[in-house]
Amino acid sequence: MDRASAADATFAAAGGAGWRVIGDHAAAWFETGSYATGAALIARIAASIPAAELPEFDLRPRGLRVRVRPDPDRATTISATAAALGLRTDPAALAELGLVIQTGDAEDSGGRQGVRTFWRQVLAYRQSVGGGLADPLHRDPPVRFTRLDVPRPLRNRLHLDVGRPAAAVDAIRTAVGQQPHGPFQVALDDPDGNEVDLCPGGPLSTEPGTDDWQAMFSALAFYPAATGAAVQLLTEVAGIADAAGLPLSVDLRPDGVLIDSGKDQWETATGADPAFVALAMRIQQAAAELGLASDPAPYRFIQIGIDVADIPAAREFWRSVLGYRNDPRPWVTDIYDPRRLNPVIFFQDLDTSDADRVLQRNRLHLEVSIPAEQLDTLLATGLAAGGRRLDPGAVDVPRRGLADPEGNELWLLGY
Image (cartoon, rainbow, N blue to C red):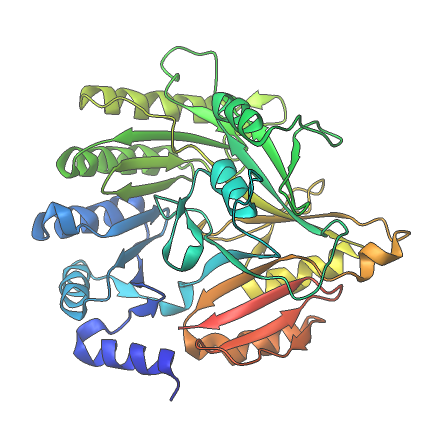
């Protein structure tokens, strides 16, 4: 038995059945069937745990992800609380996507800004253990930096789109000393030439009672709050969302509650959806009645773009391995996580006349942390979808490497 499987077995034997240890935390997904049931579970858990030890909760229309430090006793308590509501876990739902940047020098040197500093500013992340970067709210993908083996100077076939508040975008452009470029005049380059389309957000609507919200691919609102008020707000939002029948991501953290529409779920072809605007108004009013004020500092949207020659083939590979779904709109190439826990991936046409760029290995690749028992199944899924197996080399964590039909890499990390 490998180390990751042994950790899960030890955790389960000690009382954490249905949970998986992924990196530095344990996670479980509970099938709830509604926002209200998930909110009821959160309220019961919060009432039984000291505020300083509150788990991270990610509430979705039909389920709830709970993440805690790897404490079997705490996991047992949470599972028992869920069982009292008739809820079950589904470990197959646990997957956490991350970004890896290979670089010759991540550090600042001689007045030159390093790759790590660039991305820390763009993403508003914090440095994490091991020199990586992490979202302070643990919603968006972590970033790791590894050593670049040989120079690869040409443009990647993978980039990020990042949405941030307009004031933050202006500050970032000043900090990195760049004017935006590219077809949409939003692109910036890190010191190695890795690209990000950094897009400024704006108001959700001109309607009164919506000024807490900003739209940047997603519509977002964040309310700092102590635990009691945060749970109250989340419970109110759950009832509003169930009644409206509109999808939301509602994430409870020790710092407060973040509410997210998901990409494009807030708008129609002609602008903000009146039904979503009405929903936003009701949520903003509920927050105000609890004495809460919004804070735009954490607002962020991330999606991943991949340039490919054969969009249908690449799309099928990534959809199959990640368990994503195709966006039904015929004019977009997006695939999305049905639980809205991981970022959207979209595909755009690759200029195949640039043969050197087509053949160059990317400096960026994706990795997904999953329960170890899924490794070989997802490897087989990727190979069946036209992928190619990569040599994992000597590693501490069990992993399998896949390249999509055009060489873009995805590493499966087993925990």
